[in-house]
Image (cartoon, rainbow, N blue to C red; front, side, top):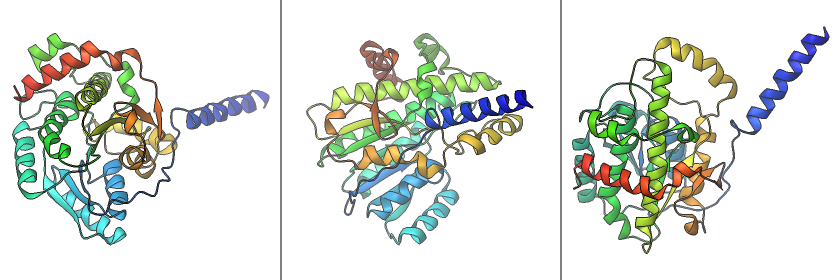
Length: 318
């Protein structure tokens, strides 16, 4: 009996420790309003993106859901309008796995919309395969598509006052690495059939996100635009939708027990989007609505600069 009680006590203690550390959440309590402001959220039709869009719409923003699937986006828009009463939530087609689609999206946006106050680079995935341009999907969607999107929208953002760029990263960047030789030769930062290979590619793409934000902050100095990278927490979303059935069978029970819901996962994104007085923290990494220290590989000036230059070339910006 005693060994069973001891084991149960250890399990409970580990569970509490995980909930208080890796799986902890937070709540953004700011009262900022967004009336008259325009927001783009990539992947805003589901998960963290949808929860973020809902709150921004509730605060009066004109919200553009930049998504690949129009049917899912329109369903999300109907939900958001019903819950918030907003009439200014719209869909614009964007496939981050196609550089042509990114260019088409930005061209349409710049013609139709007079301002951009907030860009939330929210979309992301875990999986194998190639983008329309031949890049590994982890690198192509999670980093390169967002990189090109941001660069093409920067001038419009600079025309306004106090624009912000929020990119969803992950604590997984800590286990990432960037092999520029592989990227130049094979157009990916990890691929394969096995779950550990999926995760490795995901970690590498999240390191790209952190380094992109680091370099972007440097390039935005002297402008009114600021940028932030967010670890939303470990959230139950559709991130693993491209994983196999058995992989999801393993992940789902753990997710149900420990992972945050999308609303909780959206809180740090909302903090970086709306909190007043954090402009001096541009370039910082946030978790649970607080700035966090970045490990050395996430703030390596030389690697961040090289990644930017390589991304410019691969995306056709130079």
